[in-house]
Structures are given as C-alpha cells and as structure tokens.
Image (cartoon, rainbow, N blue to C red):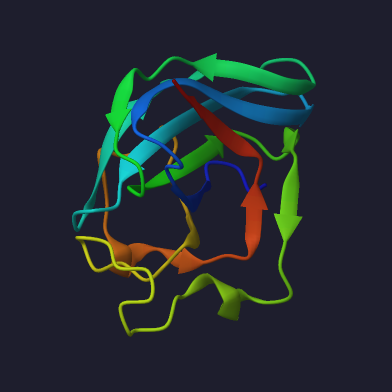
Amino acid sequence: MVANELRGMRAVAPKTGTIVDLAVFVGTSSGNIDVGLYNCQVEPRVKLFSTGSIACPSAGWQIVGQPNVPIQAGQSIDLVLCCDNITATFARSQGANNNIVLMPNNNFWNVGGGSLRTCYSLAAAFPLPVNLSDAGLAGSSDIRGVIARII
C-alpha cells in the first residue's frame, strides 16, 4: 500500500443485524492502521465507525474493532482500510484493470447516494476522514482484506 492511502470496497449485508466485528488480514505488521465503515447510501459517504489510529496487529486475520452498527439485509456499506506506511501488507485481490470498479449507470446496484464506485482509493487519508465524496475517489481494482461479522 501507499503510505496514508485509503482503500475501500462495497459490501452488501446478507442479513439484518448488528455489525459486531471488523477484521483485517495482515501479511506484514508495521506502523499504524485505521479501519472503518462508511454509509454509501448518502453522498458524500458518512463514516459510521473507525478504529482510529491503532498499532497494526500481528500477521493473520485480526479483529480490530467492534462497531456495533445496525444494518439491514441488502444494505450497501463500504469497508475501508488505510495505513501510515508502505511496509505493512494486507491480503488483497487485484482485478484485471480499474474498469471493474464502476457499476453500469442503470440502477444495477442502486445506493441512495448514487455512487457507482465500488472499489476505490484516496490519497492522504490517514486517519480516515469523516466524509468521502465520490468525485474525490480514484478507481482501484486492488482490494484489501477487510471483513465484518453481523449477528
């Protein structure tokens, strides 16, 4: 990752409940990270939860926060990660090109804020900002390993 760069991806809640755990897969631990959730039903996106700047945990899947954020089945939400250095590494999946990150503009994946961007990056975003404007985000097919648990 680039130092201080935010990476985000869209997820859809499979059931109604409460997001109780937020986890990342750490490859190499270094420096500090900030992991959070954004409401993508509005524009600009609004931060619902953030771990704040915390020490990057050891390698493997690590729970980094307990958001306790209510969510409805089918609701879209963005999972985001940023770190303060280039040494830390995280599980990732990389698509063929950045064209995969924009949904077709035909209500294929409709969210309240109208955002079509499903995977993105934002430079100079450590710690996580309060809001994310769709227009300020860059497409990114480099998706980081962030997951959430709903009960």
